[in-house]
Amino acid sequence: MKPQVFALVDANKFYANCEKVGRPDLRDRPVVVLSNNDGCVVAACEKARALGIPMFGPFFEVEALCKRHNVAVFSSNYSLYGDLSGRLMTVLAEHAPNMEVYSIDEAFLDFTGVQDIEDRAHRLRQEVLRRVGIPTCVGIGSSKTLAKLANHTAKKRPEWSGVFDWSWLSESEQDRLLSEIEVGEVWGIGRRLTEKLGAMGITNALQLKHADPRRIKRRFNVVTERTVQELNGVSCLALEDVTPAKQQIIASRSFAHKVKDLSTLASSIAHHTARAAEKLREQQSTARLIGVSISTSTFSEHDQYHPYTVVPLVHPTDDTIELTHSALAGLRCIYKHGYLYHRAGVILMEIGPREVQQTDMFAPLPSPRRHRLMAALDAINQEYGRSTIHLGAEGLSNRWEMRQDLKSPCWTTRWDQLIEVR
Image 1 (cartoon, rainbow, N blue to C red):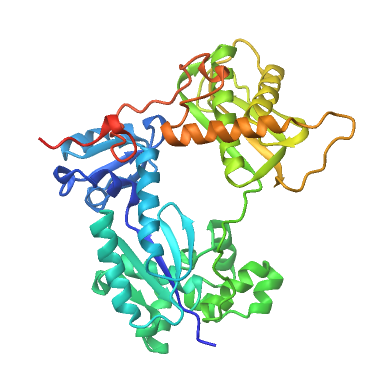
Image 2 (cartoon, one colour):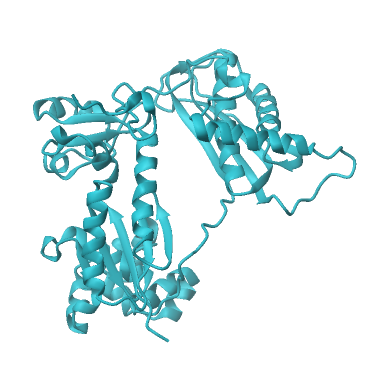
């Protein structure tokens, strides 16, 4: 068998660079992207980072700095980012026999048996830049964990020109490089695990590589043991041809302005339920439980209230109407007048395959016509845009919608927002 070779392709500063696509005037300007309700900085290009703009900090703290340095500031435009992500993945899929989409801006490629891997990686980057307009980096290794670290190296060390392969280095050179990488940069090693490993004297990737796998398994779990194996070039994680179905689906959002009335909260809950139901149908699943939450702001000086309830469903379902009916019933149970609510959301739980269901013998079965209705609703909204058709409950109020004062046009997905060249 040929030795396995993985490549991890990652788009650089994805959200910020998406805003630059189609905007030549932004090519040399620093760009930042804000979170929901324009609250925090969640993405920044290299030029913005160089100005000292911190990630995930409140925007109001750096607003003056942004104005002083002519920083282009944008609200999050998820329609634009999602469309460009789809175009990115289309290009990547043309360069490898197998691919696993890892996130909106990352994908693992199977380069096993590929000739001239270095040339393939550079051509891939050029093709993505030409057809999508987004710069990328490519990391290559004999395991997915090593490919992730190789991508980290390709990004942080300009001498590799955006592509790095562990096989280019001797074993001693590899170990020296691993010794310079903090253990927290290793894929799957989070903050708490970093602290625990540090207490054991493991502070860099090389020390983790040389750790005793059996001791690591006893002290932590088999997942961390596999990470040690992967650092030693033993592939323990295969490419996932199909993204595994989510076991929970959450739809939640804070409001641009505080909300007091039940009708506004109901519109919000209905909207989030519809989005969650769409995701449920996309993965061919149904849910048995729906949780509903509303909450005041923890930073507010007003009275605090953070209720949550779970509503069981008679039958597992992906029906937006049934889910919304149950969610609104849950909302009415937990709502109290007089509070200033800051956030609302739903969570779908006990998710399982649509084909395998345990029904209630004492309740009538769902009508198959509703399944066809949901399919028609999804098809129309996919063709003409989200919420072209929606439940009336979503339209009770629009006061719950988030603030997006600085949102760029959806020029790749909406005819009325196409870029005009004069």
